[in-house]
Length: 193
Image (cartoon, rainbow, N blue to C red; front, side, top):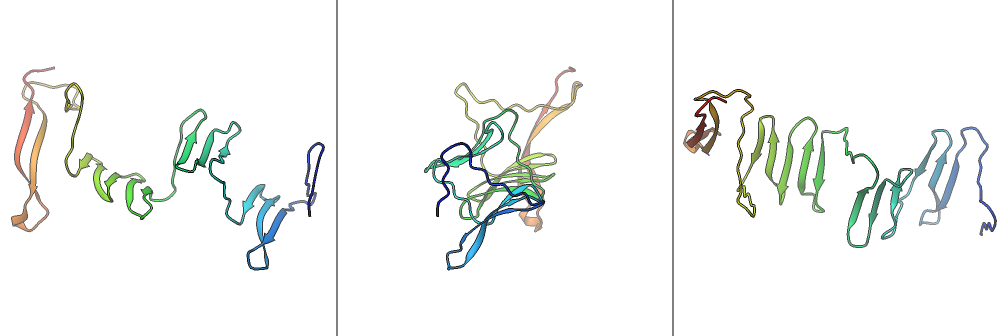
């Protein structure tokens, strides 16, 4: 059965108050199932089955197609093409990025830490005091790397401690998780500024 139209628009209208337009088809087992509903009560469109866009077919959102999602056959893309920024929000405890094996790559905790992982092992973590790096930290630059440590104090007088670098290790002998400082480099101001 075909519905053909050769001139102008083809319009479907349901004049029933709060009525829906519902599309049914075979469910794969000889019966039928709802696939798509135009909900006149809640002013929305409900899809009861998967929606499959083939490679390079773009899901476009916004009046000017500002947000685009698609798979080009090799890679998947989320493109923010409009004005403003791209926001990702959660009403849950965190936003998680995982690989296909379920291993976490990153976690952004609501009101808390951010974790970055290598092979599901946390290597970088933000804390209320700053950040913690587990493992080696390598800085590279073509004209020489610079490590800058800056105090938040606006007034520094002669003798003030500007910062320290501590070399620490766990206190295995005590049987606790205590961290002991084995050596320390301290920078002390040599003037007032």
